[in-house]
Length: 108
Length: 118
Image 1 (cartoon, rainbow over the protein chains, first blue to last red):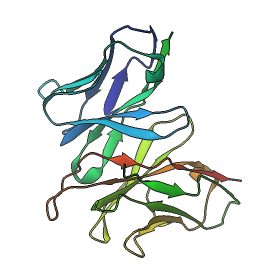
Image 2 (image 1 turned 90 degrees about the vertical axis):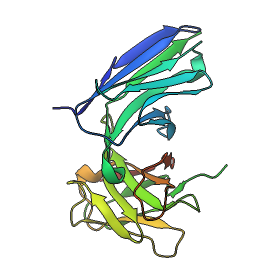
Image 3 (image 1 turned 120 degrees about the vertical axis):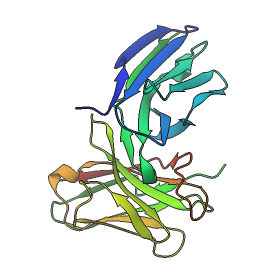
């Protein structure tokens, strides 16, 4: 049983489209992370959320603690946004449970 | 901008050999982590380290694995006797936080060390 589920697994979009990636988790968490993994494998932290909403540039992340659900939105998507987006639930002490990732491809 | 650096970027080793993966976390961070990602699979937590001791470890982190911070800057992961199934990308990460209070904080990842066990 996966404790962190992401959808969709794969997503193809046209440049400029609004994109939503969803994450559901079944465990109690202290925070929820959204990460970006580039084709070369490197991982970059996008957001860490424990409640509400955060925005950084064209990226928006929201979390609903009661429903155990988080979303990552990308506005005005661009080919450079193509990457794998990973949701990870943080239990105590830095122990993250990772989702399988959503592979996003944005076509020009 | 401060970054986490890992060496080597790629290591090929024979089964049964010892491997040490090295990481230099961001200098003022207090918490350090190792994760691994087997090709095609999701990232998995291995171990967290704070105040010169392991804070938490996963089931993967058995007696074949060890971590240490030998000199106040490096953070190493040692695999004593590698197995074929240890082949993976290993990521080091660090985070800040408040001394004396566990706070995961935003994670900063290194580029990873790819380990291939033959």
